[in-house]
Length: 477
Image 1 (cartoon, rainbow, N blue to C red):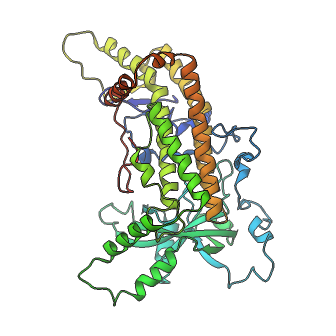
Image 2: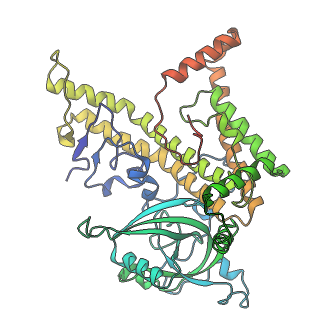
Image 3: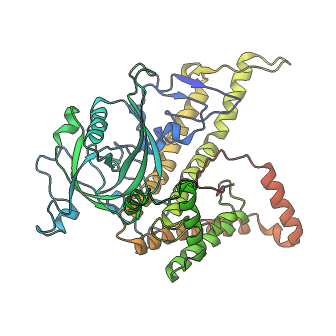
């Protein structure tokens, strides 16, 4: 069977999906049997973070300096904590269990919670997510959490190389809305559910590891809920004050006004000020280099560094913003790498269809076997290059978020965020230095007004980014 049986085209623009997109950049060539090229540009549709290659050893991480003794990701995948595999016949105690005394390891500090692994994605507190539920075991899980009234479960990142192994720190999904859609979907999907992440969870062990392989029910874990975001207390206070609230004023509006006022009045610690300054320096550098993916200058003023969720924006808001930036950088690099192949593919199709004067309507799909041998070889080489270059970037972005998630407290998260922001700033500073050495010298002879005009022209000419960001004012351009 061909590794690339079908390719789809749309408006002469395509993304190499499955066979040579970021998704398949994490799957060895021998395991690709039904790939195709498609035109969708939706990051979430392909869910490429879920596709981290599980059969490939951890690559070298490039985003941070290899010789930096403070590098939080110096140990690669092992830089974050993992539970023992569910396939381990006699699983050892986790790092968290080992550090706890027997007095601490009791039912007063731990709870039994359902575990819903959602691949290689790292979720963060105070975010909202929609899930489509179709597997029988997870239909059962939702029925159970509705019946017992808890309406919550744990989501933990899956290990990129080992099946059945999960990160030791996950997040708590609280169910906010559930829709029964089995009739509309011919029972392919049972529920469409809205969730809010209301805290973190330290996982101590999987209670029924045999369920992973049998798939007859969902996994259950023993874990400790960490309400360091204030969301769980906030929910309780909201419930207690419902009756006292003036019904003529929407509670959500009051809450948002209070958070905005708190943001303006909040005093910042020296560490928080340092993080904000690092971010500001990075944004200016991005604009100096007219990076394809960059933050708006306005985002500096709304970059949150405060703890908790009673201030908005806060540090968790900025962490999600940083996560979106890293994802969009990957998408931009993917598009850049495949651009040359796209142009050659279009030229090939035009030649095959004839060179008439009328505008050609290109086919919506083409078989891999119908390509010329040269294009077939180029596509195979493109996949190899994307595997080599993009997989480490994606893995590092994921581990960075997981490292932040498992940080002990707010101060540690501020320190980690500053490290990753500074690492990106150093990367761009090196890029700027190289440009000035090998082609940027002409700028020195131009007056500042001419430079500004050229930058504005570059902004108008560059392609628009398809970025959807739900944190209020657009943070990218």
